[in-house]
Length: 400
Image 1: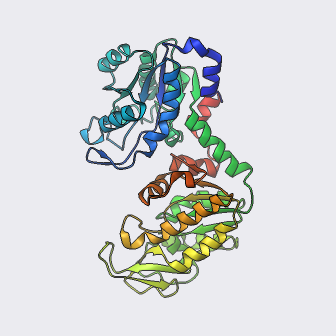
Image 2: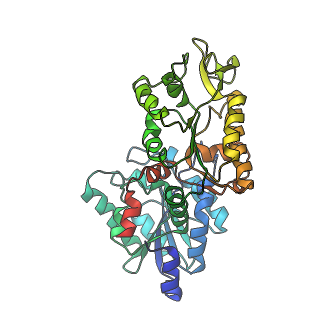
Image 3: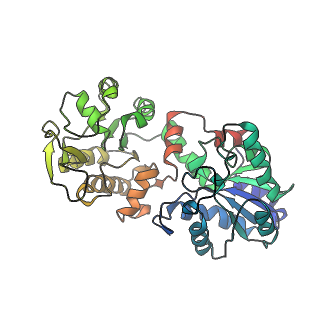
C-alpha cells in the first residue's frame, strides 16, 4: 500500500501546484446547522495540512448522513466547510459537483482547499451498478486533471464499495492518507500481535450486529466483556428473565454456545427503568431479578467494578459500544465507569483502542480526555469489519 509519506518523498517539490483529490470522512452529527461533535473533522486535519504544506491544491470529497441520492439542505456540508476552514486557518469554499466545482478548483491557489458538496447527493456514489459508479469516479478524477493524485483518508468509509472510495482509486495514482495508515496499523496490532492479557469490551443494541466480530475475536482474546442492550440476550441464554429489556430471541441459542468459551464476562447487576426516558422510575437490581415490565438501560455499579478488575490486568483493550443509554443522565454511569477504567488501564501501560462510532462519541460527550486512550478510531463499522477479517474494498483497491 502506497502512503502519503511515499507520495511526498517521491514527488517532493514536484507536488507544488498539483491537484490532489482527498476522500475524507466528515460525517459528523448535526443539530440543525450546529456540529455537535467535530471529532472526525479534527482527525482529517493532519493529512490536509500536510498536503497544503507541499503547495498542492486540495479537493476534498466527503458525505454527510444518508440523503436519498438528491440534494437535501438538511445534509449539506456547509457547516463542515466552515469548521474545516477554522481548523486549517484558511477559507474552504463549498462547491456542487459540475461547473461550480470546476470553477472553484481552477481558482484555488497553491495550498488552497475546496470541499465538494455531499457526494451522496449524487445517486451514482452508492450505486450497485459498476458503470454508474465509474462515471462519477471519472468526473471526480477530471477535477484534478492528468497529473492529479488520489489520497484515501476516510477510514470510516473504506468498507464501502463506492465511487469516491473505490472506483476513483482505479482512475488516479492512489495513496493511503496518514489517518487511514494509522487506523490500519492499530487494527493490525489488535489482530496479529496484541500484548496479553487482551480484553475486549462490547456494547450496543443487538447481538446480531456484533455476532461476526464476537465469533472472530473470541479465539484471540482472554476476556470479552459484554454490556449494552446486547447483554440481555446473553442473560436470557443463562435462563434469566429480562423483563421488557431488548431481546433477540432468535439469538439465544447462539449466545448459549458462545458462553461455552468461558471467556465472556456479563454484568452482575443492571439499572432498570419503567420507561425509556430520563424521567422514568429507576432501580438497580441483580441480573436474575429484573422485574416484569421493566427494561435494563445500563449496567450497574457492581458490574462496573467487576469489569474494572478485568481491565486493570489487561495489556491490550479494545472497546466498541456503550454500556447503556448514555445519552440519558440516569443511564450514563456504566459507560462512564468503564471508559474511566480503560483510561486508568492506559495510564498503567495498556494499549487501548476505542472502536469509533458511539464509543468515540461517548468519550467526547463524557468530557474524557481523548489522549487518555492510545487510539480513538474514526470508523466504527470499518473497524469491526477489519477485525472480522473481511476484505475492505477501499483498502483492497489501494493494495492493487
